[in-house]
Image 1 (tube, rainbow, N blue to C red):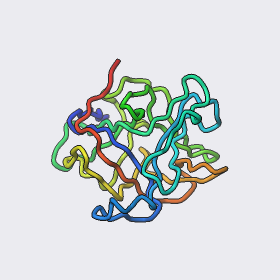
Image 2: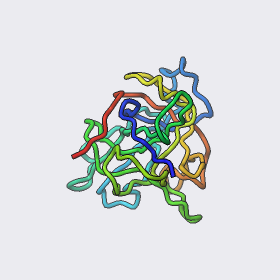
Image 3: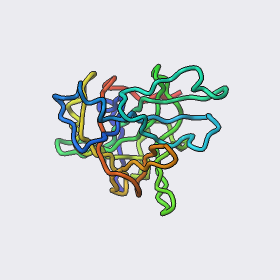
Image 4: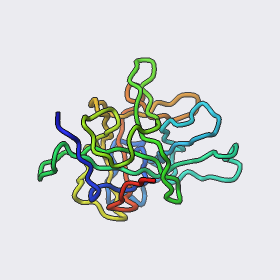
Length: 211
């Protein structure tokens, strides 16, 4: 069994969007707001959708938050995501990188959760769970917590770069979708609308946070 090796030089922090149309041309990025929905997650709100990855509201590049959006002590929103890069064995020119995804809040504070999915037929949702290992730990096997970003040139990462039309794919090879229910746009691996993801690189390389 090949170990998945953490690569700090190719890890990064990004803001992410769900594309509401099939493709966005990078040269039209500044005019793309109507075709985007920001990705985010909340913790400790006391609500049903705590810890689920969501893409909403539509037509905005950033989720607008006011004091009224914080419903109780400890309620947190995370709108940024750390992508920890892994390769199967030592990287080479044709390496396909996989990513551990962890949430950060808007002031770049990391939160100790990691993105996972529930593959039961009655669920399929993407959500965050407590990690079994510190961020950036080498892994003995793939596991469910490593993701693929099809279309991303991992060797062309720089602060401010925007990467459009990426496929977010689970460790089992399923393309992530958005499932709308009860006014919520929740990310799902089994149900919903297929589309693509855009990333804006905020920091690269960005080392793993280890308390």
